[in-house]
Image 1 (spheres, helix red, strand yellow):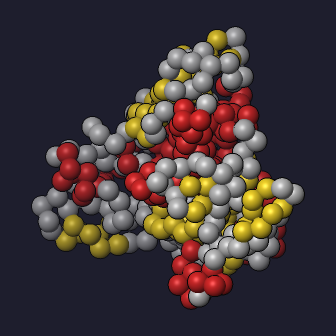
Image 2 (cartoon, rainbow, N blue to C red):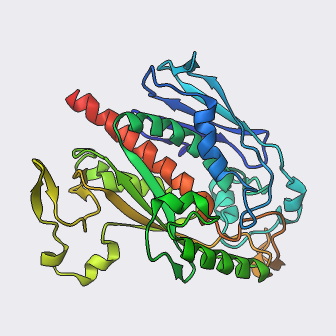
Length: 355
């Protein structure tokens, strides 16, 4: 099965299904002598795991990571780094009624057409549970980026019609929705609770700011940094769009307003504004990289919906089980992980060019 690997020099391959015995990841290209323990990885896994608050799925998974290879005496060895996360709280019987029916918004039909078979238990390989593997790999990538003083901050900018009006990075982990605005966070939580009570779900927007990225990362033409980041973000199942810098608002601007004038700041080439979002010609400019992604409302809802069964006959469906009414809070660490994996790969490629 193709499509399980991501990256060139920092290459990540994930495996496992939502209701299988375990999920895991293998990373090739991790540089040697990087301090790394299971605790380093667990921090981000705990931010993504289910059952962490009243507005997330109540599936109970500790998501305890096991490092199987690639680390010795607290340091990476430069060999393949393998990590395993065992599934503990699967309730496959919750999905027994769905084996002969297509869930709206899910990959049931498309997986069946692609492979001729599908794992109906929680979506199998298409489940959001696979993203735990990405978060584990992203934690390793962040260790590489930390040596280059590159930091990544993602946060929930909006949920439904509620949008944060200020950005305070210090409060992101102090509210259930991981918003940068405490006042807006309370309103977002209320909207999510309303949707849950109505057996429905909500989407939102996640914004990411990457600080300290040096100029020069990314490659012209097909491997532009923004193209690689877009690939990374759109590979997350729940993402439906991405914009960089001014994004779609640029369509309402003139070139004279959108262009970022170059200036000398303490002897460094910088730009006075950052409508480009830190990327010019597909290559990082040295400014903060800024992008926003659209997160769809979760497809698994208890509200009755129209659908078809395997014989193409009309059917009705109410999805049982434990599901997120809004996935934004748990997607935040996944977004950071995919951004970290992309930048770590680009950083290693750049070092191979310039030394």
